[in-house]
Image (tube, rainbow, N blue to C red; front, side):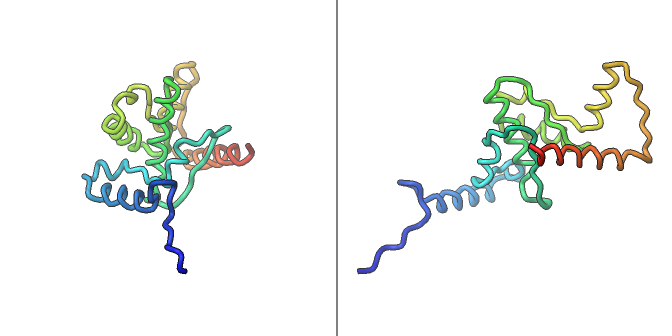
Length: 156
């Protein structure tokens, strides 16, 4: 007697069917919703209990920024405290702030989006440390900072 084929399921639900339906719905949505769509496979990254710094890497368009946005919203809801979201890109903080206000307005006021450069400059100025930016050295310094952050996450 031939056994019926089983699909990937978790009890009563066809998980693959649910994932496909969520993706199809997201593809029909306006671009603003698509740009904040969290694929079901990415939810574990958002909710994971990290024991220290973490780095998520991948090629453009794989959802790293969306994971970061949802992670910030998740932490703001979970902790009730303030969250600092820092990025190397100068235009990303404004865009991410707009997306967060649309997708999770209840916590948007507790997440601060900043570029690393603007945050560091304000931090130093608040402590009366003179800031003298040598543009010729900026790329080298940012690359070193990124590498140190990455090495710190690997060492943990």
